[in-house]
Length: 224
Image (cartoon, rainbow, N blue to C red; front, side):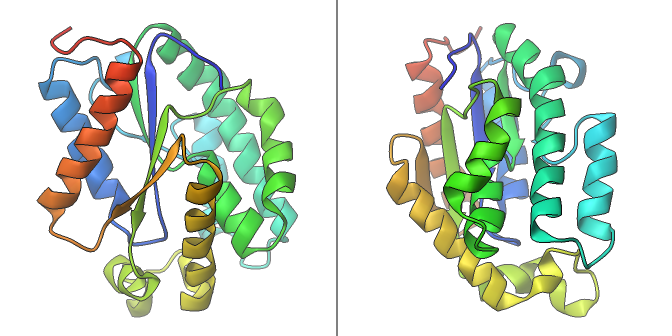
């Protein structure tokens, strides 16, 4: 793991787990503690992945709303390309400046979705991502653990609003959830499971506590 002046926190989970809601709440709470949250150009903002750069947003559109017949490795390499652009142009400069960045998905999504659920192999997917990461991994990855059936119902996948990944259905999402659980076992120093099937505020409290622990470990002081 590459150590920088700032802190990188990623939120993960199967579709509909509530991570986007929790990421936004976390940014609000960390900012209220006086921490420099988000990119300097968009203070307090969550960074979504893929996205957050012009190239990343274009790739996101292909991945989520493009052809349904993308080959698994094509999908994997597109995610890796968007991630490499994000790392190079946003994450590394902002972390060097000492900012606290909250990501809505990062590397572990590729490991769970493509490596595990699409059966390409976690090590194989990690290997194609590594050159673009420049040694950067999250200080902590918080996986919201939710029954995929509940998650898909939350996401609106059954009423015509599903994106290309959500449209894969519940069995695929169950493999994704199993993939995240496997990552938590493999990387316990970084990846933590949080029970997402609770009241939003209870989940937010656990997310905030884990994030503040990472902030403290990095030596950042609250209140600036």
